[in-house]
Amino acid sequence: MAASLQRYGVIAADPPWDVQQKGSFGADQHYDLMTLEQIKAMGPAVQALAEDNAHLYLWVTNATLRVGYDVMEAWGFIPRSPLTWVKPRFTLGNYLRNATEHVLFGTRGKAPVQFRSQPTWVFAPLQEHSVKPDEFYAIADRVSGRDTKKLELFARRRPPAPNWSVWGNEIESDVSLAPWGYPVPSDYARQDDGEMTPSVGDGESEG
Image (cartoon, rainbow, N blue to C red; front, side):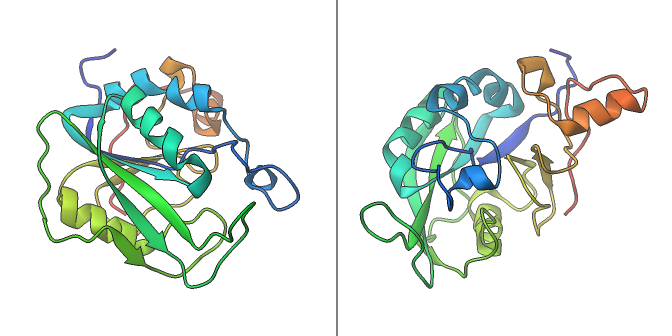
């Protein structure tokens, strides 16, 4: 890869899990899903984009909580703690009605937290499908450092905070994962404009 590859001290990801997400009200009604093996196979791309000392915030559902740890390790991070999003009302569920979602926090290399009083839960309102609460980005700033360069994978909107770059199918992406076999519409748009498909980050968003 090019020597100028932009790397990030924080990677956040909300993979399109295919576990218990099919049906008339499932996530497959909103976006394409990926199998567990497809998500784990993104490890080389994630490791190339993450700094040697970095944090990972990996969103999981109750149904993917256990396999989320497998993904985190496949991406080169050590699981450290779950953070549970407590929602003000329950949603769907195959056994119990879901009123929580989780983000797994992990580290790579020597990456101490900047704030040691963060509890393992946050109460925040629901927004449209798959949109994460604004408080999550405030937590990432507190725990990982406001000035740390951050990248959100599978993003569907611009984070409401500075120093975030984004990548995903439904957004103008700041970085390209095409060299690892994960092109998104932004890559094709650049080609249509006569630009070379980038193999490195184009620079972080300022929110």
